Image 1 (cartoon, rainbow, N blue to C red):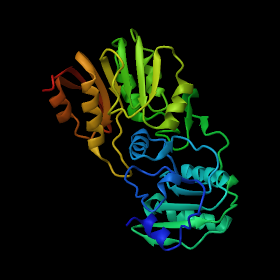
Image 2: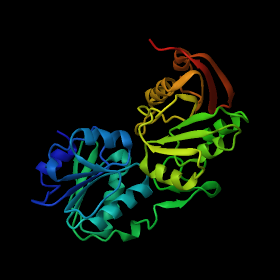
Image 3: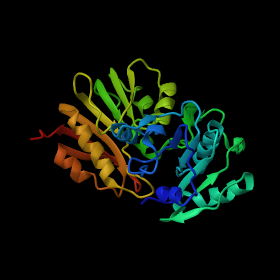
Image 4: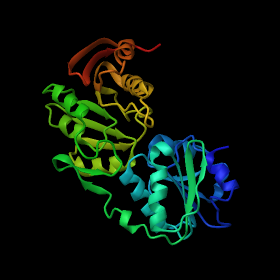
Length: 328
């Protein structure tokens, strides 16, 4: 059984007899079997996990809607994002707010901080984490963020918890610097984040159509504010499943992710490469940036006839791949 299920059974997470139970940002592999599914409202802004819960028949939305009888909050990694999520949950919930998190996600410090601010149950400790409940009516407004969209670098808007919110990612900057002055006409920015790289792509000659595909809903909303060029088309979607509506792409450009949590997982980046190659026409091209240690050259060589490193330093490498191999 999961820590949450055990905590419910042990009384550390007391569920109400009626009303909606909001579950804030559970990963696709979270165990919610102890909850009454017909009363659960899942808030999940990450599109792959959002779609996984929807496929199981849950009510799910990228944003909270209305009020809740009880909330269960799964902790994110970033401290500011943790506080903002808890403040939002407390403000929208008429009853108690329960918290579930791992020690490596900072749950112990969150527990200590909350005990200084409001009434909190003792913690249920299991499986390298804790679960506990904040009493109804807790005022966490000092942790609230009035406007989740905040000023970021170079006049762009970013948001708490999105990738590289405080500065332009160095890998994206290296990739942008390595792109040629003239690009193909139809392009996908695969994992476009809050839009900085897309804005640089649109400055190049010849670009007629750019699909910006991003799975993080908060980053997607920022990108909609940051990139208003009529050639840009924004999609909140799982980039590894996204397909163009009409013709295949002339080029895919990407700074692919390589983390699922705190651990590097090159399989995620490889999934981006495979998906990107699959949406290119036979003469298509791909430009990517990756951390120096990530072994993407082998995957690219399986997918493309011509692969070269065109820029890089001790930390990053920019790879250019041409001529997708026909998949049998």
